[in-house]
Image 1 (cartoon, rainbow, N blue to C red):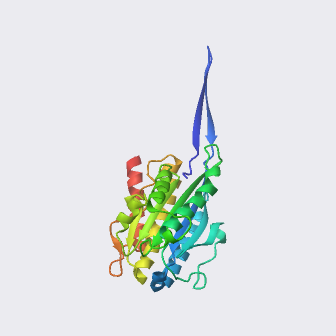
Image 2: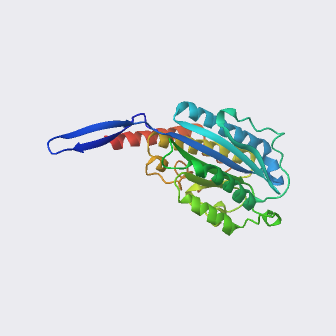
Image 3: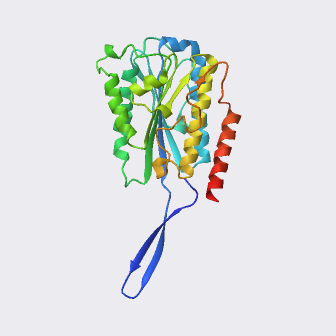
Length: 289
């Protein structure tokens, strides 16, 4: 949120005197509920350590953002899925989140992707909807990231019977609310085609190679987008605080999201990200002159 407090002007007119007063409006706290829906099927075993490191880096990035932007608070949820879903962390303040370990992340089983998305997003929706009111003293928002290295193959075995059509309807409904941003990270598939079947915008989709370094590159991508989002909220540019940036450009706001994060060519090194953010800041300042 911008350091400058907004001012609301009130004009009072009588037959003889017109008086203008200014009321200082305190910036609202922006509360982000960050939800990672993470594949834990057997194929993820080849990138197990990189996936663990990836999650832990995201948490460290979020903790740093809270210190840099005191008007922004984060709550973390982690749901893993294979044949069914496991709630590992449920809406915990970022400062209290414990690191993922080899003991708490053990890949095994098939891929109930649709069930994880439908069940997980619905749970978060039910929790946040009551607090997403216009007269609240804070802005409540949600960032959902789905990460998988394969295609759906097990949801039809579960009682809830989540289908791509049901998931798409859910996602498209939430996409109409700028406070919701739903993203898809996929490997070993056409992630853009898969994401579109689930209602996820192209700008919120990213491909990664299912390798150790490709998976590590995901942490850079997520870190860059989290930083960019926090900065835009601070500067009042995010649509959730009345700005003009859409919730459908999460990855594409700072990355060439049509490129695949691979072993041979990881373009998301932190120094490059920082340089990009500096250029963005310079453009902002030039446009204000």
